[in-house]
Length: 166
Image (cartoon, rainbow, N blue to C red; front, side):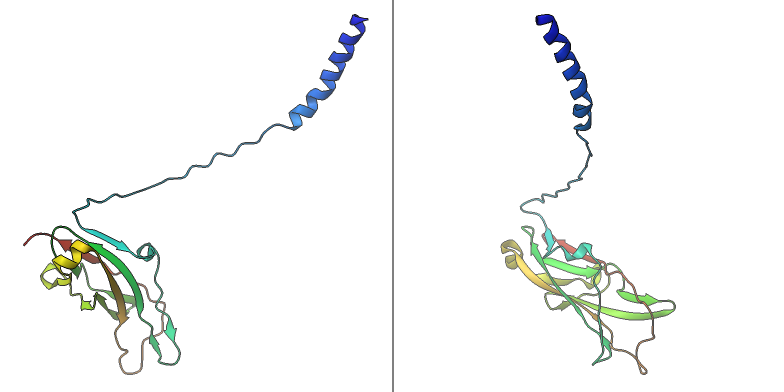
């Protein structure tokens, strides 16, 4: 009788083998690149609130005023090295074809000039040591007579922050 059960078990296993092949697991690899910057606790730290600096900021057209609305954001600043100063690395402009719109950039209420010689203090040594949240504002220049020239404008604002002992 044992001889009869062996062929049955073999036939059963062969019939179930294709079903187990249908239940095969599919795999899909996913790689995530993770980045982290841990600054010196006593060094200069500048951190945009809400990570806006990595995204395009849109100056919306205001139909009522026929001007571009300003961009208003915030950043956190901290330094154990002394006061924090800021300046523009290059002139802040929006351009479209041959047309330009100048931009005024201010941090903590201080208008930024171009170059290190034009640096403005945006946090005193005391404020910097404790950490300071500051407003960042980017304003388009007033339109000339006749308004802005039509176009799709783009530009970059390059701000530099420095801190160190005098």
